[in-house]
Length: 431
Image 1 (cartoon, one colour):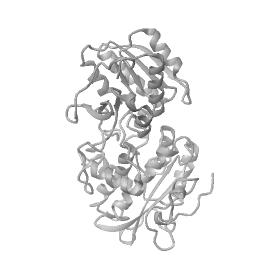
Image 2 (cartoon, rainbow, N blue to C red):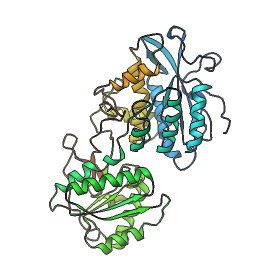
Image 3 (spheres, helix red, strand yellow):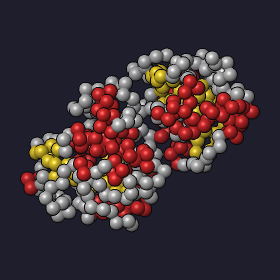
Image 4 (tube, rainbow, N blue to C red):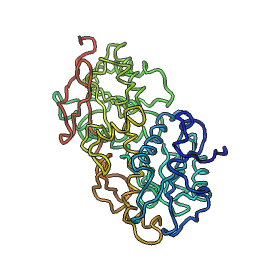
């Protein structure tokens, strides 16, 4: 295991040092000679600092999304002025965040270190199914809890859900539920579905959910293309669709780059389904920057947009949160930012009025989190089910509309800002 550097305050970091390497970075103010001398369960009256701990894949293929999570943790600390209330007492906040390199074994080692050496009070989740499960296994060994926003797999529910881990992201199987629901109500009703997915447990769970929703609504799955995670060439996949004849819906379970490559191949091969669902990352700026007007009519699903009517005790709206985040970090927040920011926010909500000498007692924290009921947050109202998973009806459905495509929410009705345009016209026949 790489030896991390010493913790330092955020104010002493430039952006390059914040994001690079396997550093253990301190967020917020550090008091006195550091945190290592605290006992694991200090009496509240003697305690003056709340210590958060986590690991993220700060290097490797998930570096960009890990940066968003880390920026969001930092932004929460900035928002609360480096302070939080615990049992009515104001305390300073500090963080230790290690680089786990997206390696589950390393995540386990680092979680052990956070608990036994760094003696963190609160653990926030890693990113990715295997690393979240590895973190949870160590937390469970020590009788600790975590809140995570980086793994949608049902394995989290089955192995560590509720007793060890509370999860702010919906289950992968439900990602496409509302998109299928909206499309099967359109005219002419779609009859066939082609799924593009990947040889990875989470993406296969997404695909399994889609197949269930399709079967329940009388839609035939005519293609399930399971691709390697590092796929570069989508032409063979689109050729298969074209040879099938009429394909009403194409659903991409993958990320933004896959969405882009599919549309590029649709254009090159003159193939137009009646509806194309680009997946849960069509909102990433690179999609519109690359596809431009060819993004029109494409659908997407998302957990969160600044236009959604969410608020918390710091921000009157999701848009106000997004504006403040962008002013601080220099880029528009994705749903990852809203979700990650909400993790420490929830800890604050359950600790503010905590009683007893040790409000960080895992049993007390577990009971408080399990008892949350529609608590308003920037991420949305928070209630956890018996597995510690956020109550989740499915992802809202978006469509890119207009010559300079702009996002329109088309489902559910409670969030809709416009109507679904369906079926989409042939790429060849567009102006």
